[in-house]
Length: 306
Image 1 (cartoon, rainbow, N blue to C red):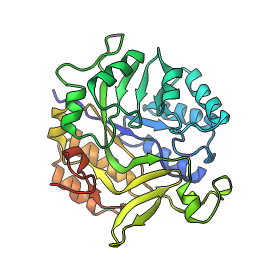
Image 2 (cartoon, helix red, strand yellow):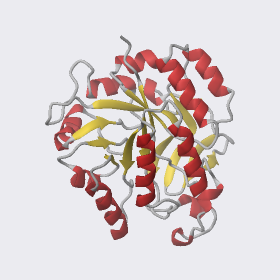
Image 3 (cartoon, rainbow, N blue to C red):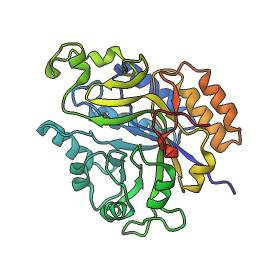
Image 4 (cartoon, rainbow, N blue to C red):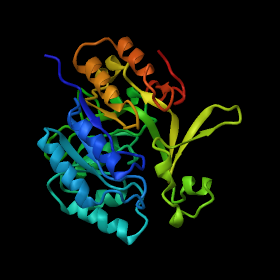
């Protein structure tokens, strides 16, 4: 029997208004998504929703039949950030995704998810993190699928102390989060200080595109985060994903046509639609960038290979 490829909606990387966030997750409650990762991962100044709001939203989504994971902040820069992290770790209602080493320290001994921002590049490192209690692993974005299969082999997966095999979840759609910095690049672009940024990220619901001297889309500025300009898309890699033992696909939200993106991934991976039809449908959408898939195929991340 064909095993379902679970679809995870990754954390919202951009700064959207409270109304837009609420509307987005209402649409995801009616989607084919199996799991949603909630929480602010990029910048502590983005306070449209506080932890209590995220927890309330998590409860609503769980009532709609979704699995919910709470994501921690990627850069911990203040005591306030640490207090929020401790509050996330102290609640036991929802699984938590660790985005940095301080989260690992607080979560060890209980089940948690390893985010792509935890630098795991070999099986020994994955085994060490599994010993802490990890149950799921999202590999770093630049790892190709063949390497992912070597680190967590489908025939002999890494297990945690409870004997549970770690699930592999691959980032399969969206602008790739490449780096984080204590400096806010969006504020600097607008000649503002980080502490008085006037929340200019709200003006760019898919980030601010940075172009090369050849006038090609190169990177995207998203506050303290740098992203790829291209949209990583593995809709056409079903055989390679299956061979690598991937059980879950992570789809990262964008501001337009995202419900259709989720629909196409569901159709291709779980309903038998051919990949070319799905890719044709995606290319007809008003997505914020061109499709790329190079990293997964051990090539430059900016390229697309059929």
